[in-house]
Length: 168
Image (cartoon, rainbow, N blue to C red; front, top):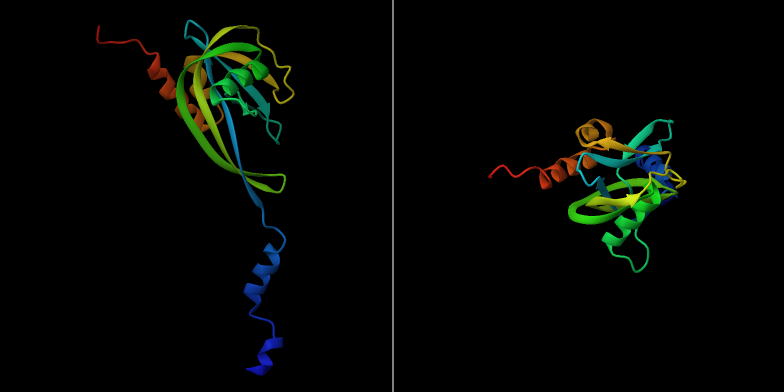
């Protein structure tokens, strides 16, 4: 046994250790808020388009980071205004989406609180540097326009909130 102290271990475990050495990522939690902004007639919703790393335009709901002292509702209203130019008021919570991604040598666990909002004024604007395009999209087209499955699911739930009451 005394001779084994200087010997290297089996090749496979050594390669694994070497491959992962120095690559541990710091895990951080981030929280954002935003939502589905509908016009007063409940016919259209405003979406933002951003270019992905391949140059494709991906449509999503407006959202952004919570600032110190803000509630999630206040953040949703502020971010909608900043990213779309549209002023809105919160009508109803839609739920939260959480997901993981890696950016800037960090593993990020992001939670986004979504709300149903109603537009109260403003004009579409894509002046926010994070946004490539903004557009009013007919509600019937959201399912095929939104890039992310979790957002499509939230939109389906929101549609039930303002569907006509059939009980008469």
